[in-house]
Length: 226
Image (cartoon, rainbow, N blue to C red; front, side, top):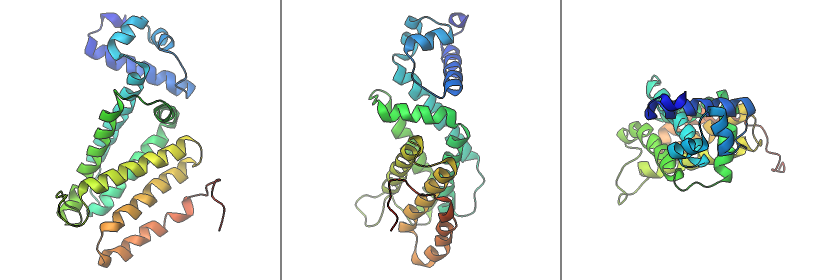
């Protein structure tokens, strides 16, 4: 019985079962009562632990963010902080694609229902991931942490990359991008953002990284060909 398990462990077990349900149905269109029945606890217990359906689903998004953070930390460096920063975007996109039956419905829920109790913390954690992954570009002098100084701050770039990923995830969730085009678009446009702070002497060489991705970007149905 789940109720006999310590509360800290119980939360993780419940999240595992909710994740299983979403993977099985590729949907979050269920009530808290349905979730409680699937997990094997009373609705009251479910509410006492999580408080709302949105909190449950944001807990799953945060678990995914934990995996992305640990995965990025474990990635070997490419010897170039610019490439390492862009590799973070590629890693995240490939992670979502591998678990698309879970993350498409989770992000569809997030886009359709604003949960102000859980959302700010989730976005703050995402922003902090980018700040960490841009530390190497700061060491090169491409970014800085002084908002009074000219040029781009690390916060500027972190927020731009977070905003970019949120928008492309929306396009993927809505079916405007298939999986491969999603990974390519996430990576391609991250390159375009970071090249804004790369010195001219390096930009031409790194621009080849952008050109190599263009064939995979696909075509948006809402864009009229020129």
